[in-house]
Length: 179
Image (cartoon, helix red, strand yellow):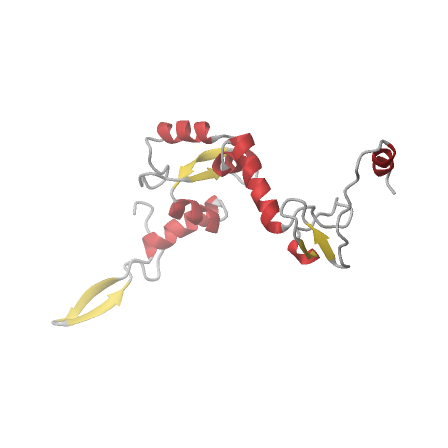
């Protein structure tokens, strides 16, 4: 018996008896339901290796905490991941004129950052942010993509009246530096 339980019993207060829980199950104190251990989130620092609250209650408590402490999930996410809040995000967006820093699309929602340093670079639209991610923020890969786009524009060429052939203007030679 734990020390706290002994003190409560000796003080004369009523000690509430919890219902017995079968092996491999746990009782959630928030909803009062007895559920299988798989219905509880893993927690390595916890006594039994599982969280105290069942997954739905755990998620609800997390949402309530984010709302209470940060004013919402977006603020929490921005602060935790990038170190800025929604207000700083809106100021940066205003500095960019309310458009994507790369393509100029209106109302971008994705905060771009350098993965090596963690520094925020700007606000991008979904497509530009994904494109940078696919190229792994590597300037040489992006330069290679630009060279590829410049050098592989296929065109229809008239070789005989009514007969066209598809060919590249740079077939067999590198693109000119001016193109």
